[in-house]
Each structure stands twice: as structure tokens, then as C-alpha cells.
Image (cartoon, rainbow over all chains, first blue to last red; front, side, top):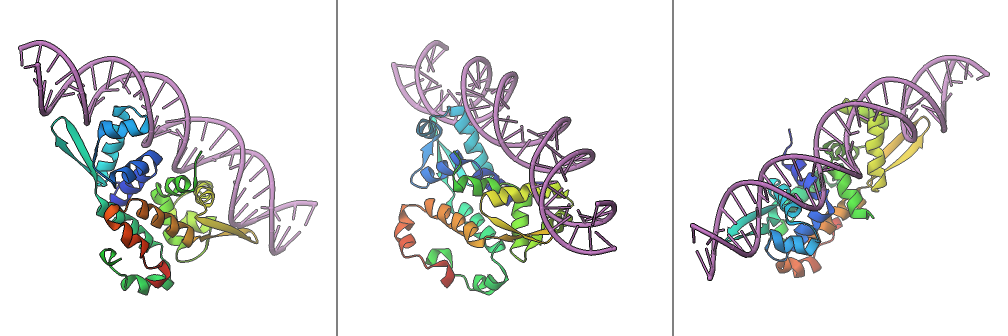
Length: 105
Length: 105
DNA sequence: TACACCATTAGAATATTTGCTAATGATTAA
DNA sequence: TTAATCATTAGCAAATATTCTAATGGTGTA
């Protein structure tokens, strides 16, 4: 019964996973690359990446032996924006409708 | 060792808690009010509210027997915006600097 | 083929979360 | 004061999450 927002916010509840996303916002990295940056075992990192991928926040693409993970920036920002809209109170509703598209910021 | 962001995102990992925040975005509500809307015991709701209050996302004010909880909208939106900025890649950095203040949207 | 390396899955230990009921505090009203 | 109501804390059980090491799978190279 878990929807997209559930998976995204479950993913973001982990500080290491949020940090992973910030690393991936700079460049694509492999499981081992990331594990080294975290002093964390590769299996543990692999699980974190699986959680993030399950939420659609990252995508892994095999490049030879390695699997390069990249951030799906739009999925993440859309989820944040969607929830931000949901908690924007009645007074801000019309402002929401006239919101400037993210690309224009 | 948990910082503000940790507490905010830990809070948001729970679907009921996210829903609580959307309810509170409309109006202040008491523990019992909220428990009734969730088919959840009052103690369970009280704990959720304690978690949210610990993250600074809501504030409770006693009004006679009841305790009215309100959403601290700015704390929530600031946390979301801060993380969104952190994952905005290099290409968007300069756009960030020129970002339109939230109030102007 | 045989070996090395990277990634993932499996299994286990520990810790945390989440829900309940029961008990305790706090406040108002009879 | 006594009773009623709302909120919270305490104690417990079940489920989940996080980490490790060991085992397995996939890929490239000698």
C-alpha cells in the first residue's frame, strides 16, 4: 500500500541516503565509489542505492564491471514540490496556481 | 547526533505524519480531533505529534483541557527548500542565487 | 579457462518504530 | 471535593530498518 510519496520520503529519512543524493547531484558514482566516501561496506551501500532506486530517485546503469548511479533530479524535486504544495495553506493556494515553473527560476 | 534536517526528514517518513501536517495546514486541531480523523488511538496520535514537535514542524498550545496544534509552515518549507537546493546540480547553482523569494511566488 | 573485481543477495544481530491498553497528569465543571 | 474529559507517559508486542560478513552473480582480462 505504499505509494510514490511514501517511497520517496522513506528514502529521505536516512541521513546517509540524503548525503548520497547530494553526492550524486554533482556526478554519477558507482557503488564502491560511494561506499568509500561513507566508510560503509559495499553491500550496505548497495542496499541504500536499491532503496533510492525503488523510489525512483536514482537510476543505475551498468558500465562494464561498475554500475554508475545518477540522480533523477526531477523526481526528487517534484516530490518535494508536491508535498510543499500540499501543506501550503488556503491563503497561498492561488499563488500556487500562478507558480513560476521550476525551469524559470 | 541528530540535527534539524534529520529530525524533519525522520518526521516526514511516516505517511500518517505527513497527513497530519496537511490537516494542520488547514486549521489548528487537538490530539483527539486528529486521532478521530485517523482511526488511531489518542496516545498513538500524541506520539506522532511529539515527533513532529521535536522537529519543530508543529507547536502545541494548551487551550483549557485541549492542546491545539498548529503547523509551523516556515520550518517545514525551509527544510524542504534547503534540501532541494543541496541537490540542485552545478548547472543550476547560479539560478539558485537569483531565486525568487518564496513570498513572491 | 581461470582469475580478479565489482555488485548484489542472504542470513543474522541489533536497534528503532509503531501500534495497543493501562496508568498518570492536567483542567474544567458539578 | 468528586467526577469527567483530554493529553501524555509507561510498558509491551510486532514489524522494520541498518549494519555486518559470507556467499553468489556478472564482467573483463590474462
